[in-house]
Amino acid sequence: MTVDIPAKFQGFGVHDKEHWSEPKFVEYTPKKVLPHDVVLKNICNGLCGTDIHTLKANWSPLKRDDLVVGHEIIGTVIAVGDEVTQVKVGDRVGIGACASSCRSCTRCQEENEQYCHKSVSTYNSIDHFADNYVTQGGYASHSIANEQFVFPIPDGLDSVSAAPLMCAGLTVYSPIVRNLKKIGKKEPVVGIIGLGGLGHLAVQFASALGAKVTVFSRSNAKKDEAFQLGGHEFIATGVEKDWTTKYQDNFDFILNCASGIDGLNLNDYLSVLKVDGRFVSVGLPPVKDTFEVTPFSFLKNAGSFGSSLLGSKAEALEMLQLAADKGIKPWVEEIPISEKAVNEALNRCDQGDVRYRFVFTDYDKAFTN
Ligand code: NDP
Ligand code: ZN
Ligand code: ZN
Figure (cartoon, rainbow, N blue to C red):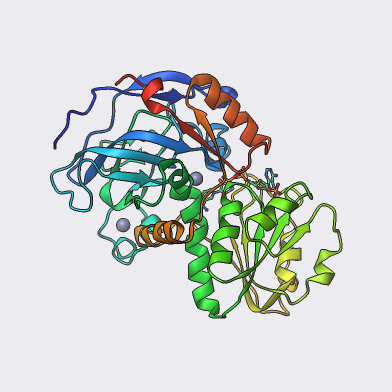
């Protein structure tokens, strides 16, 4: 252990789901620092769609009455546990949506630590390794995570651009590289559904990796931007009702990045896959919403339907280097963090009014510890 860790961390916390977008300034006791933990003084943090689902209790109840969300965290390491080897005090690093895991099971040992059965999410998760502490996210002065979930940021990437890569970037990069590798084509045809925080990075990464990218969005509002991001074709699904006819036998891989399933007919997407094509969903609706699908939609193309959660540390490091080398950056609206700013950003993101990621900044002005 090196630098003093404040006895209390400061953040913007939500009391209950009825007031999901009205955070208040809170102070709370941090979780205890374990031998493999890294303590960050935070610099900035991106707003992910999952923050909204969590605060609205769309997936599970809020586990604290001062819940601080945020899992696109960039900060400076101020202290490390006695057994940390992967980072050191003074490093600029990031934390995504997972903060800890057992590190000994097969999944942890085979670079699938995000799928560990004992993994701990960065916020609103019970940390069985730390006295069942309920974890707190990055709308806060400081953060603590196991070193396996702490990613060094290359010098070529500024902190605000790096923040959305911690969750949104990694979540799309992992299924894109895993699936394109299996598909093994030089110029695969890829579809990206939902041009939000995840989707706009998926378009950039898929196109940087050589894919021909079609963007599916509900309206034409984001058409020009889809092309600027590297998209080659654009389909406004709410307008072009007969798009499935035109795109028969077209896609090797479709990645769903939408945060809801209104108007998302899975049968349509499965029907336009090439033989052995794959549809993978990273977008997650409220837990009560389900996909409806008939096997006949993809009977004639041997298509597969899959899912994907975050990405591994190995993939995070690879993605960050690719982003630094190729100049891949999220489109960001910066907001100095405060109660009012978090309130505005949560509401605007919920209404789809952001191009394409909010990043909270100016942490040194909002927090005094
Ligand atoms: P955003 O709010 O930034 O973007 C969501 C996009 O989804 C919108 O821009 C919109 O695109 C599209 N959309 C489709 N249907 C709806 C709907 N009913 N309501 C609102 N938007 C809709 O969210 P994020 O990109 O941050 O997150 C996307 C999803 O991914 C969320 O469900 C989030 O929880 C999930 N997620 C999953 C992870 C995983 O590991 N699997 C990790 C991180 C996030 P358009 O206007 O183009 O139609
Ligand atoms: Zn996220
Ligand atoms: Zn494990």
